[in-house]
Length: 215
Image (tube, rainbow, N blue to C red; front, side):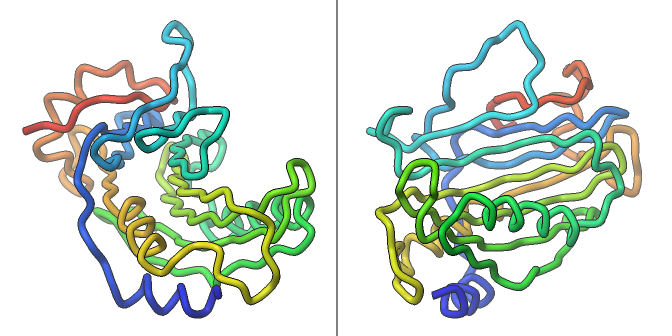
């Protein structure tokens, strides 16, 4: 399954409709921006506290019954770290909690000069909840923090070699974590362009916030 999906996501890239935008603040004027599919709803959060993660669910799903989720996180301690080590660590966590887990080779790219890495990780059975899981991760390494967007499918337990998520769903999922950007305010190298006015109003403390994209 992993090999087939890797071929699909490398050769096909589709644009997804934008609803909310997640903005990860790393500090020192550095930002990570991710477009969330239209209609997806952010889960409630404590608005008074700085939070370094946020989650979204598609229409009709709830915290109790979700099968599809997008998560955006900020990791201030991973500034200028190694994206390979970062994603290897995620794969190790899956190995500890899964009956059998597997991961695709790391795919590296750049966004506005920032290094990114992509990896698909699956879990035939999560030992904590007796369900399977298929997750797509894209990490971006900044000068002030690391940023991660994840698309996760919760599925029934499955056997090695099975395909618990359709190719079409995987292509859409890859698209949903590909609409990302990163920049630094007042930087000619990592310009924020149309986002300057919006980002300049934020508090610049490590966190993930939910905003509307500029027109």
